[in-house]
Every structure is written in structure tokens, then in C-alpha cells.
Length: 88
Image 1 (spheres, rainbow, N blue to C red):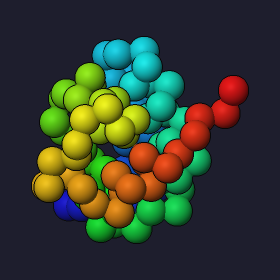
Image 2 (tube, rainbow, N blue to C red):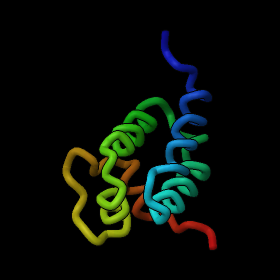
Image 3 (cartoon, helix red, strand yellow):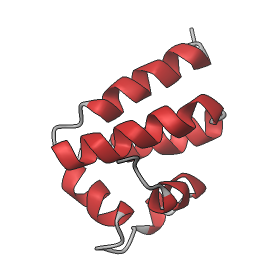
Image 4 (tube, helix red, strand yellow):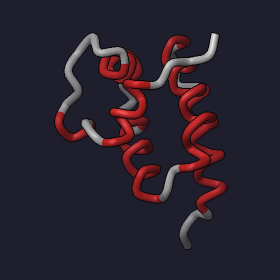
């Protein structure tokens, strides 16, 4: 049985808030709250694949432009994440 999309969104938002690295928690948590409610299943797939890397420092470096994004993660979701500015 497939997970309902609203439950999936809530689960991914929660994962985004507790990644293991405070900087990534702030970046991904804010991003997820702002954008995941509008993501379709395909965009959620891309976002979940990013979280599944379990490479918090890498995700942060990719999102902030400190390191190039690997081809497999250079998706529209990553482009949206790279342009996201957390509220202060």
C-alpha cells in the first residue's frame, strides 16, 4: 500500500528538521515547510532521494554553492533549494 501524499509530506518535513547538522536542519526545515506542501509525487521523490544520501554537510555545501552538485542530484528541486533563502 502506498503512503498518502499528505503523510509523506509531513514525514519529509519532519526529517528535514532533524537531519543531524544544525545548519542543514535550519536550511532544509525551512525549505521543506515552504515548498513541500506544493510538491507533487515526482518532486517529493527527488527531495527524498536527496535526504536519503545522509550526507548533511554535502547537501549544505551543494545548496550553498560551495561545492558542485552531482549530476544525479542536480534536479529542479535542488535548483529551488539553491535559490531558497531562509527567513531570519
